[in-house]
Structure formats: C-alpha cells, structure tokens
Length: 80
Image 1: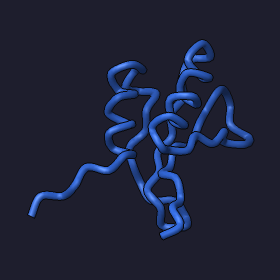
Image 2 (image 1 turned 120 degrees about the vertical axis):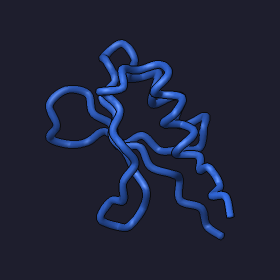
Image 3 (image 1 turned 30 degrees about the vertical axis):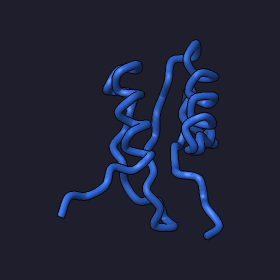
Image 4 (image 1 turned 135 degrees about the vertical axis):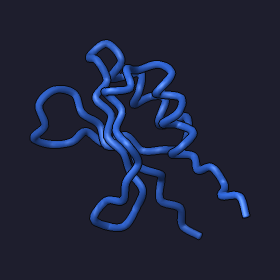
C-alpha cells in the first residue's frame, strides 16, 4: 500500500526548492507526537515562509530562544 503524501511533506519539498537544503530540517515527531520540522530561512525570506505556510494550511511557529530566524513547521490541528 502506498503511503499518502502529507501537506507537511509537500510544503517541505517546496521549501527545498526555494531555500538552501542545509536550512531545512527533516520531518520528525515533536513531544506531542505530531510531525514537524524546522526551517531557518534567510531574513529576507522569513515573512514569505510564514505567509506561504498560512496559505498552504500548515503552521509556522517562531522557535523561542533560538539564534537567528528559526521556524517550527507543523500541520494545522483539525477538529474532526
């Protein structure tokens, strides 16, 4: 059975085409068990990544206490 590609995987793939690969982390599970990854966009791309995340249905959360502009990307919670 083929696994369905998630919104998070699609968004990450898109970022890899626009941001240096070394600035986009691998998808992993956070402490709540949700898939997430970190991205460190250059300052001029920071707002672009946040806006794109909103349009694509994923969440971009600034990571507190990090050096530089680091965002944690996760899927939006849905109430089903």
